[in-house]
Length: 214
Image (cartoon, rainbow, N blue to C red; front, side):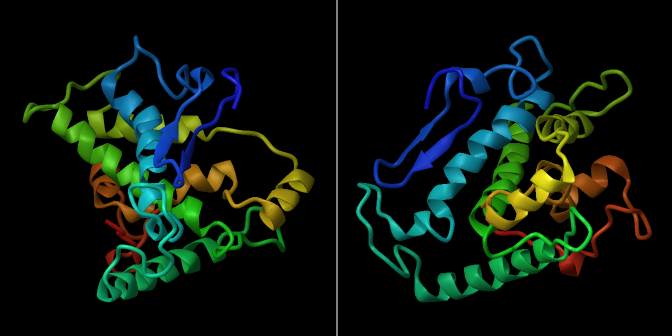
């Protein structure tokens, strides 16, 4: 990738994650910004790329980049449980209809959806650890947890014509930006605690229907 490319990737054959210079700027990262926003932005993106080493594809490679195949370094029991959880994730994304008549393909986007959910979860844990047991300050009326999730949502802000969304839905292994910003938090208990989300609210998902991968 070029340094001006806003992107990042994980390469299982080299076991590396790469972040070009262009992504290390707002809204993903801002050295002058609050830690919570940065953990929700670039922190979750870093977690996303790391987690690719533990998804349905990355788990088939060892630490030296050798392709092991299935089950890779998973035990069969762990692989069975992983598949059960990821199939639940497939169902969540299959239900999303960004454009009328066109649903996200949960199988096509599975690897990226795993990474979005895992990356956001581990970034939140990292943010909590960074506080060292202290309570995060309230800034502009927002708690640290709220700023974290706002940081995540901000990196996926976008505006796309319906015709382009249809092309993306049919061919791109990434879910549309709006879905990437809105769906993963609904699988995390900390999101509900941060905003006091309760049954009946638009982003509420019953505990039994939430998917926790790691």
